[in-house]
Length: 295
Image (cartoon, rainbow, N blue to C red; front, side):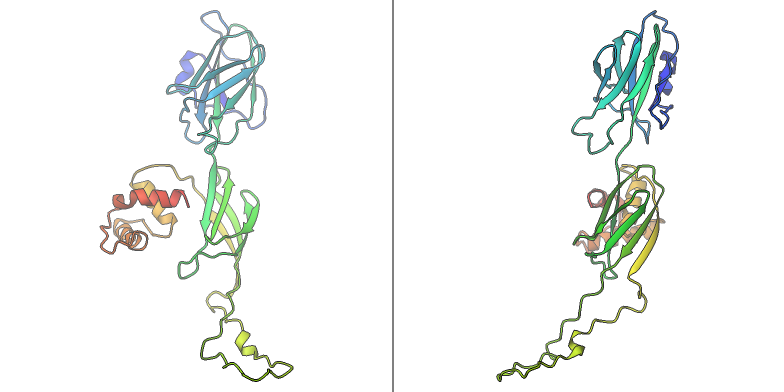
């Protein structure tokens, strides 16, 4: 969220950003037309791509609004009186799930300037992790605590999903997981005693062996796990690179072509029940993106 001044700078309108603290925007260069003009440009912060069709409001000497448009996300408020103006963005219903609310910013607009403010929206980002056991089954009832980049905690549902909103530019995360203990072994049919037609003796004799908890796998004796995760922003790209990253994220290696081909065939067999899969990455692109992005 920044500002640029003058028509010559429009090509670079997305290059500057506001400081993190809410201080007023500085004035821009003099207007060659001898007027006080007010404009704003709306971008998304992570890609500097213009956002069109969103309403930008200002309040100050006058209350004005204009919609962003074009390759520079321009909202033109026209000629205004000098003074302090507060910019706010009224996100449409379609964009509210995609972007964080814009924090209003002030701009001191002096006389006879062509004022261009660059406003940037922070995209929403979610960290999604599915806990699976050694057989690929979702783990429910696992207690988890995320300590960075934000603090959150909870218990996994039947889907084994951990889902937390995090800053889009996060590069790491710290996650503690407390796995549930294995369920008690149900007595086998041959272990079950035949019902006694006579009244049971008192006190009832309890066989502890029938209620003994199963031994924990010696390779995984600890139910408490601490993970340090590397995070990267996954772009919404419909190409081989985007498909490979999504395939990797759901547990299918996809680094070299032979490995990717084997993983695609495994995906087709497991997810699509196609036992004669092609191994071609493009053939699973649709279902892969849907499965990955909506988990």
